[in-house]
Image 1 (cartoon, rainbow, N blue to C red):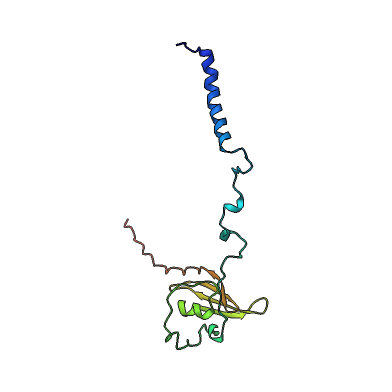
Image 2: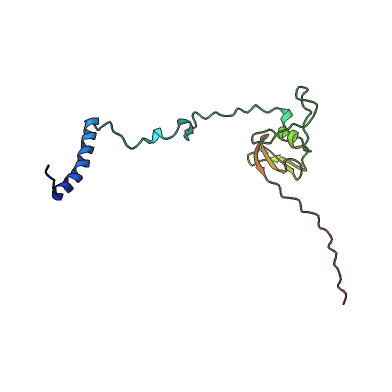
Length: 167
């Protein structure tokens, strides 16, 4: 058997893999217009995650009644018999709650400010310095719009005793 010289082996070793790739691609399809290596941006995100807002469920808020507003002292009218006998309601405080919903959860406020806003609407600020939910709660037209952290009360200063060194 005759040996093939090195001058012939090198070009064949380079051409053979290229030929295999060409044959493999040619066997797959002759129509390359359906080949899409870059996905469309529409397919990357779920349609519910877009900013369109059409599919995002909206929270329904019940209309307010006279029983949802605090008086000038920060007190609420007695709750209806179906709700309970004036016991505090457990749970957190969230935006869009009524004035009395917050008072029933957080208790009596340390400071109450009732007035009118810039456009003549009812504006109430309830300040809680202690308790389970300390903070400043600002209401517009009976609904909680802003919650702020209350400043921590200053700790009581302890009287420092000085020890005198004997000389």
